[in-house]
Length: 77
Image (tube, rainbow, N blue to C red):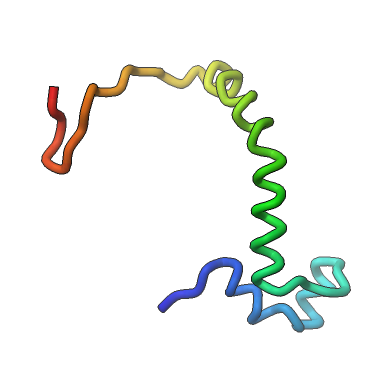
């Protein structure tokens, strides 16, 4: 089984070269790192939601309507 990105940090957590290159003196555990990202996501989510319309407009992204209903076999009207 593969590891999540958070669990993969355990392989380099105590790697002095990695810490030196990143300019850090310590690395949180994978569980604490996951908690910090969750906490940050809660705080930043309103900012992202507020800016989505502006991003779509600035990218000139096409906006189309969604079908009324989808099922496993495809579109149902």
